[in-house]
Length: 274
Image (cartoon, rainbow, N blue to C red):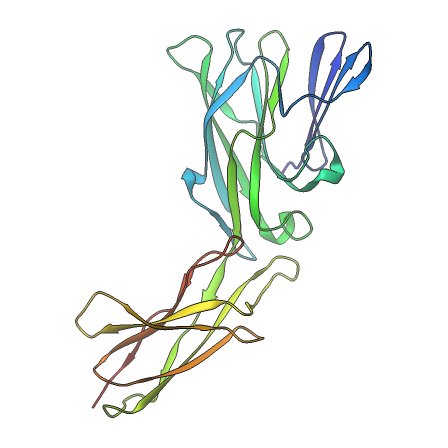
């Protein structure tokens, strides 16, 4: 994967946009008679719109494998569009490396096709994200921003470092085990389980501590789960609670997710009540 920085500099009125092999940062400066002035988060004549990351869904990453994320957008420039660049970055200030906590680039330049309207192009970029390497020491879960840059047919460059945002979350796993089984009606059932989430630094899943999880029940023959109670995971992500056996059915735990972690639901565990 190319993980690069987009550097924008104004030299004698001409904007030069170049991609370098370091994490994403748009370092921008405008030379004036009074010195160096940093512009806003966009520069140039090419305008970007209709950007959608991963179909509008969260990007959920485990610890292994590759996640292909498609980004679509529109680039508009009456001088035409020769080439565009796309990056996902996280941080507070794209003009400094210190203001960036993570950056992801594409393996190949985005594909852009001019529409029936002159100067309007539909574009597609593909990010192949490898959590084991791309996320281990590069960025954290949460909100990421989409940086787009472009050159027109006259080699003039443009960029916008905050076209839209995307949420990158850690994958979570959840289990549930109801005992004893079978059980006599009216007796106590103990439901245990564990909530864990991907740890990109270690490449393993670790217990998710102090998280609210719902215990739910579905009667045999029904398709609907009802929440019985909400409990919290302990210091290792373990869940344990009790309930009364009434009828045959399935017990499960359900986790709604957080701003950094995806939702998870355990498979229902059937209990035969006699």
